[in-house]
Image (cartoon, rainbow, N blue to C red; front, side):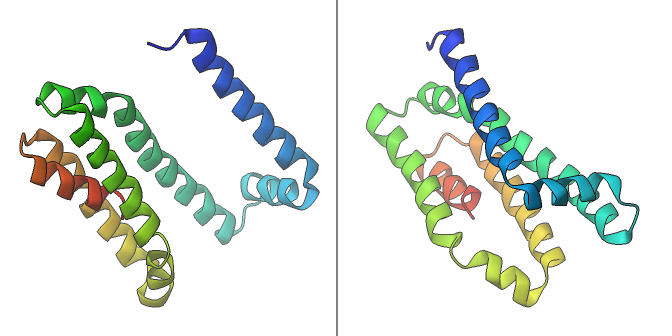
Length: 143
């Protein structure tokens, strides 16, 4: 188990670095202020999008620390556990290169709905004790 000081120190360092980078880029800072201060339709849409995006990311981040222990509980050894994680990251690296452009071409709304369905299936596969099903779930989670 990692010490709490290391965990919270890493989080604090990441937030500090992000704040410094955003703070030094005045155009980015003005853009962020505009999203929260403006009353126009685009800013309203951006705020609602960010809320949904953060909820989806929170759901993904909350399950992250427990997935390794879940797989161990299913009796999956250290090597195969690594295969599952590599499959998820590899899927993200592969599909991430072109899925965004497909969303631009065929409609972002459709791809947001597709993402929600795929993420739901990804989460549902965690309840299976079969390596192949867990592998499929990791690949779907990377899309």
